[in-house]
Length: 344
Image 1 (cartoon, rainbow, N blue to C red):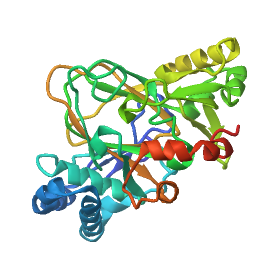
Image 2 (cartoon, rainbow, N blue to C red):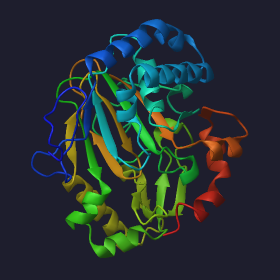
Image 3 (tube, one colour):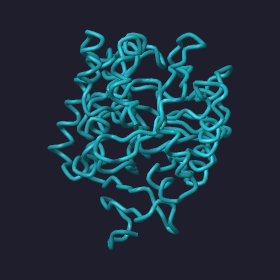
Image 4 (cartoon, one colour):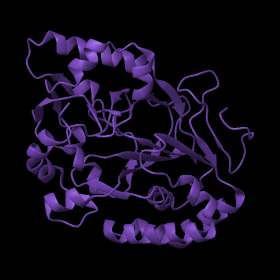
């Protein structure tokens, strides 16, 4: 481990290299005192949160986050990080017997950004229940079948796209694993060739809108790049492996680069089990993820989408949020996408 302390409540533990022997996702274990604070918040405000509309839910969660900053500053400090400082973090021992949606949203706000949702996705609720449903489309959160390698909502231009994803486990069948691949580790390992990397940075790919947006089946955004720089020299990825194709059908170099990227991500993938009481947050542009088949038993996780700020979405839609129309954003974002995210 990279720290000298032994694992325990209130200690963040992590290995230094992704996938190295003994590697652990950076983890903070909730102390008994902090757990009491969270339980008090859930008991006092959980039912009201569940019955409220999104804007009111956000007000309630902000109040709860302020209370945690005062009553449990060590928990708040462990969660609060610059959005790019830690690409993935886990908090263990979160109480989930009641008010779990409120607790999930409150922890997300402690990251320091904003929580939002797309109107067309999962009913447009602020904190989305992730659970399987019979007859769901393949490669979706509600499908019980394996969910392929992807980053969320890659079709969105960068100013409108989720930057961090947070999940709070409430119920999860044993053996239901979620995998993560850190892009930096993929680049360091060398399985992704230099030629493929260059091709993937060219705007020669098409990305299909996710099923969850409930848009037209043939809604594709063409002539975009899969890899790009974030303006500070770090490489980012926007890639739904099952919804990406070369813009031109005869572009075999682009096709081979996609296959190379998928294999390289697979080689760097680390599978973890999200236990009940695990809160997991990761950077959607620095890690790709997947999920295996859902095992027997109930599955329920609460999900939040996070950004540093939602100012660009407010300006594009003319609405205050925290729920924004994906249709309106996509229709307003073509020029923005060309100028910001898809330049190699």
